[in-house]
Length: 103
Image (cartoon, rainbow, N blue to C red; front, side, top):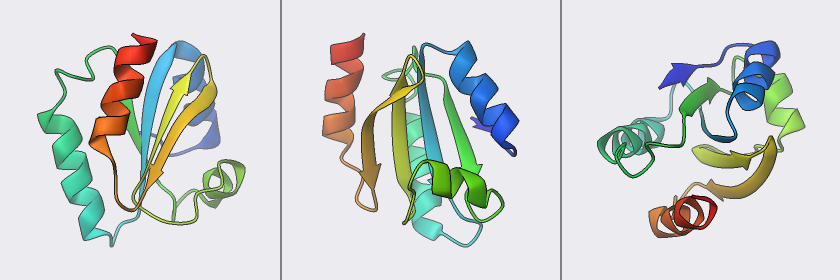
């Protein structure tokens, strides 16, 4: 997983990857760590989906631009457009559906 620490890095990450996933978390969120571990564990499922993470407490501009009000939040992008969002209770089955649908 890649740490994105500026809006320029976020824009570059989304521009470089047709499919992309961003995990939004904070430094003090313990649930965020378990979601990150689950994404790492299931990396074979998401092999065509580059995954990055953003500390929204360090990058409030990201929080505002992408309307992230709670953590953990997983955002899935296709061609730089958000296609799926899951917050707090991450539904991995729905994420799998979008992975299969987009390819």
